[in-house]
Image (cartoon, rainbow, N blue to C red):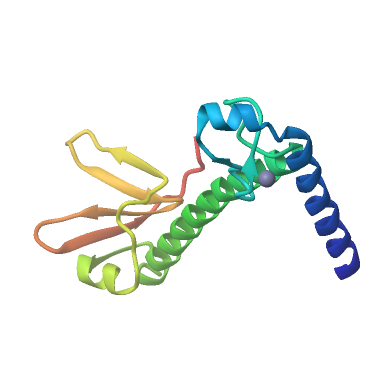
Length: 152
Ligand SMILES: [Zn+2]
Protein backbone atom coordinates (compact mmCIF):
# COMPACT_ATOMS: atom_id res chain seq x y z
CA UNK A 1 0.00 0.00 0.00
CA UNK A 2 1.70 3.14 -1.26
CA UNK A 3 -0.48 5.53 0.75
CA UNK A 4 0.21 3.73 4.03
CA UNK A 5 3.89 3.71 3.21
CA UNK A 6 3.92 7.45 2.52
CA UNK A 7 1.99 8.18 5.69
CA UNK A 8 4.42 6.15 7.77
CA UNK A 9 7.26 8.00 6.06
CA UNK A 10 5.70 11.33 6.96
CA UNK A 11 5.19 10.16 10.55
CA UNK A 12 8.79 9.00 10.58
CA UNK A 13 10.02 12.42 9.40
CA UNK A 14 7.74 14.13 11.92
CA UNK A 15 9.17 12.04 14.76
CA UNK A 16 12.66 12.89 13.60
CA UNK A 17 11.82 16.62 13.63
CA UNK A 18 10.23 16.28 17.05
CA UNK A 19 13.25 14.48 18.44
CA UNK A 20 15.49 17.04 16.88
CA UNK A 21 13.55 19.90 18.46
CA UNK A 22 13.19 18.36 21.91
CA UNK A 23 16.72 16.98 22.17
CA UNK A 24 18.47 20.06 20.93
CA UNK A 25 20.98 21.35 23.46
CA UNK A 26 23.51 23.99 22.49
CA UNK A 27 25.54 23.79 25.71
CA UNK A 28 25.94 20.06 25.44
CA UNK A 29 26.97 20.28 21.79
CA UNK A 30 29.51 23.02 22.38
CA UNK A 31 31.04 21.04 25.27
CA UNK A 32 31.22 17.83 23.30
CA UNK A 33 31.95 19.50 19.96
CA UNK A 34 30.98 16.22 18.29
CA UNK A 35 28.07 15.64 15.98
CA UNK A 36 26.61 12.22 16.63
CA UNK A 37 24.44 10.66 13.99
CA UNK A 38 21.68 8.08 14.26
CA UNK A 39 22.92 4.58 13.40
CA UNK A 40 19.75 4.02 11.39
CA UNK A 41 18.85 7.18 9.48
CA UNK A 42 22.05 9.22 9.82
CA UNK A 43 20.29 12.26 11.30
CA UNK A 44 22.24 14.28 13.82
CA UNK A 45 21.19 13.24 17.31
CA UNK A 46 21.30 15.24 20.47
CA UNK A 47 21.12 14.16 24.07
CA UNK A 48 23.03 11.75 26.22
CA UNK A 49 26.47 10.66 25.05
CA UNK A 50 25.41 7.00 24.79
CA UNK A 51 22.41 7.76 22.61
CA UNK A 52 22.65 5.87 19.33
CA UNK A 53 19.29 6.47 17.71
CA UNK A 54 16.85 9.35 17.25
CA UNK A 55 13.98 7.32 18.64
CA UNK A 56 12.46 3.87 19.10
CA UNK A 57 11.41 3.74 15.47
CA UNK A 58 15.00 4.09 14.29
CA UNK A 59 16.23 1.60 16.89
CA UNK A 60 13.64 -0.97 15.79
CA UNK A 61 14.37 -0.34 12.14
CA UNK A 62 18.10 -0.81 12.73
CA UNK A 63 17.63 -4.01 14.74
CA UNK A 64 15.26 -5.45 12.14
CA UNK A 65 17.88 -4.74 9.51
CA UNK A 66 20.52 -6.56 11.58
CA UNK A 67 18.20 -9.52 12.01
CA UNK A 68 17.45 -9.67 8.32
CA UNK A 69 21.19 -9.64 7.56
CA UNK A 70 21.75 -12.63 9.83
CA UNK A 71 18.78 -14.29 8.18
CA UNK A 72 20.39 -13.65 4.79
CA UNK A 73 23.55 -15.36 6.01
CA UNK A 74 21.58 -18.45 7.03
CA UNK A 75 19.75 -18.47 3.71
CA UNK A 76 22.96 -18.12 1.70
CA UNK A 77 24.65 -20.98 3.55
CA UNK A 78 21.54 -23.14 3.16
CA UNK A 79 21.65 -22.45 -0.56
CA UNK A 80 25.32 -23.45 -0.77
CA UNK A 81 24.57 -26.71 1.08
CA UNK A 82 21.61 -27.46 -1.17
CA UNK A 83 23.68 -26.78 -4.29
CA UNK A 84 26.49 -29.00 -2.97
CA UNK A 85 23.99 -31.79 -2.32
CA UNK A 86 22.47 -31.42 -5.79
CA UNK A 87 25.91 -31.55 -7.45
CA UNK A 88 26.86 -34.70 -5.53
CA UNK A 89 23.50 -36.23 -6.47
CA UNK A 90 23.99 -35.38 -10.15
CA UNK A 91 27.50 -36.82 -10.24
CA UNK A 92 26.54 -39.91 -8.27
CA UNK A 93 23.29 -41.39 -9.61
CA UNK A 94 24.32 -44.97 -8.76
CA UNK A 95 25.15 -44.23 -5.10
CA UNK A 96 28.86 -45.01 -5.45
CA UNK A 97 31.23 -43.67 -8.07
CA UNK A 98 34.40 -41.69 -8.66
CA UNK A 99 34.89 -38.16 -9.90
CA UNK A 100 37.54 -35.44 -9.79
CA UNK A 101 37.96 -32.23 -7.84
CA UNK A 102 37.94 -30.42 -11.17
CA UNK A 103 34.49 -31.78 -12.12
CA UNK A 104 33.05 -30.86 -8.72
CA UNK A 105 34.54 -27.38 -8.89
CA UNK A 106 33.33 -26.87 -12.47
CA UNK A 107 29.77 -27.45 -11.30
CA UNK A 108 30.19 -24.89 -8.54
CA UNK A 109 30.80 -27.23 -5.61
CA UNK A 110 31.88 -25.30 -2.50
CA UNK A 111 34.33 -27.43 -0.50
CA UNK A 112 34.10 -25.19 2.57
CA UNK A 113 30.53 -26.19 3.41
CA UNK A 114 29.28 -29.58 4.55
CA UNK A 115 26.73 -30.91 7.01
CA UNK A 116 28.86 -33.50 8.77
CA UNK A 117 31.98 -35.62 8.72
CA UNK A 118 32.40 -39.33 9.26
CA UNK A 119 35.72 -40.78 10.45
CA UNK A 120 36.35 -44.41 9.61
CA UNK A 121 38.37 -46.75 11.84
CA UNK A 122 41.26 -46.69 9.38
CA UNK A 123 41.61 -42.93 9.61
CA UNK A 124 39.70 -41.78 6.55
CA UNK A 125 37.27 -38.88 6.72
CA UNK A 126 34.13 -38.81 4.62
CA UNK A 127 32.54 -35.38 4.08
CA UNK A 128 28.77 -35.22 3.76
CA UNK A 129 26.21 -32.77 2.46
CA UNK A 130 23.10 -34.44 3.85
CA UNK A 131 23.04 -38.04 2.60
CA UNK A 132 25.58 -37.48 -0.21
CA UNK A 133 29.24 -37.66 0.67
CA UNK A 134 32.72 -37.73 -0.74
CA UNK A 135 36.11 -39.05 0.23
CA UNK A 136 39.19 -37.34 -1.24
CA UNK A 137 41.43 -39.99 -2.81
CA UNK A 138 44.95 -39.90 -4.23
CA UNK A 139 45.68 -36.92 -6.43
CA UNK A 140 42.63 -35.22 -7.85
CA UNK A 141 40.18 -38.10 -7.44
CA UNK A 142 37.13 -38.22 -5.21
CA UNK A 143 35.04 -41.21 -4.19
CA UNK A 144 31.36 -40.31 -4.08
CA UNK A 145 29.04 -42.20 -1.75
CA UNK A 146 25.45 -42.13 -0.60
CA UNK A 147 24.46 -42.85 2.95
CA UNK A 148 21.27 -44.76 3.60
CA UNK A 149 20.99 -44.44 7.37
CA UNK A 150 19.00 -41.65 8.98
CA UNK A 151 20.42 -38.62 10.78
CA UNK A 152 21.47 -39.24 14.38
ZN1 LIG B 1 17.18 8.05 13.21
